[in-house]
Every structure is written in structure tokens, then in C-alpha cells.
Image 1 (cartoon, rainbow, N blue to C red):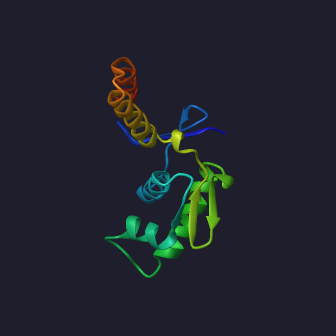
Image 2: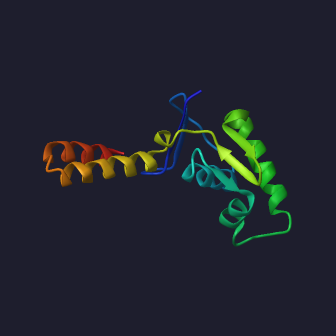
Length: 130
């Protein structure tokens, strides 16, 4: 299974190239928050703070567990790993367009600094295309 997450432009999730629609804003928010740190653990406390900040309740931890369970049903169980104290999105950062943009823009700036305008231009254009 190939998962791609798009922050730039319209928010989108694609599984094997096909768009996937998530029901509920909290599912979107939890997946988005995990995608911001793709491949790195995010603590339960951070997820609750970021997703339930304005409506923080005593049941937010349980609600988070339910949201993660529903995401696993839609995507695949192995994609969101439970780690000590939180969750980890098992996804390469290059499968999240915002991370790809940052990488390409950084490479373009380095090419510019090395006085390689053609390479810099190509990399900036790739980043902007995202």
C-alpha cells in the first residue's frame, strides 16, 4: 500500500493513487498531526493538545484511541504504530508534500549558493509545483 498526504493546495490523502475521504474533522486532524512528524513518535499529550485544545475533556485520551482505531480501519493497521507514550506514522517524509517542498527548497537554496542557477531554478520549480 502506498500512502501520500497532501497539505499544499487542497488537503488530500491518496492510497495507491486513489483519493481517500476521512469522516470527521478529528480523524483528519490526528492524521495531519502525525504526518507533520512522519516517521517520528508523537506523544499522546501532544496529540491531545493539538487536536482537542479548545475542547479538551477528561475523555480526550480515550477519544484519541478511538480516532486512531478508525484511522487504522480506513488506511491499514500497520501504518500507525503504537509507541511508548504515543503514536508514530510509519510513513516516509517524502510521501508528505510539505516535507518534499521543504527538502526541494533547501536543495534549491544550496544550488543557488553554489552558483548553479539552472539546478536551483529546476528545484525551486519542482517545489512550487507541489
